[in-house]
Amino acid sequence: MRTVVAPAQQADTKAGPAAINLGQASLIGITAAAGLPAARRYWYWHQRRLRESD
Image (cartoon, rainbow, N blue to C red; front, top):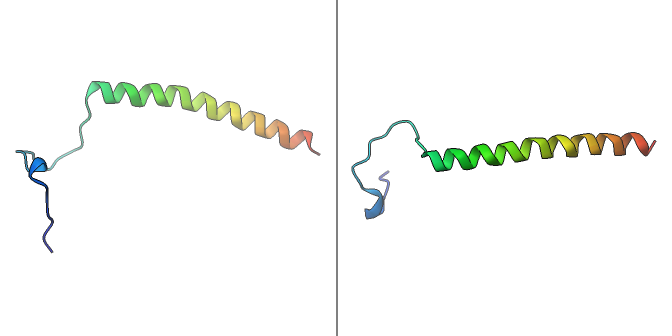
């Protein structure tokens, strides 16, 4: 089976570990920094709601 690659993707790239630039890493970090506390708040709210319904 032959994989077809678009001409724009045929640059002189080597197979290796994935790399991201600093801007992408910052965006991932900011998203995680905002998402983890939000998920924690939701978890506590949901647990409180379950306990109050009894």
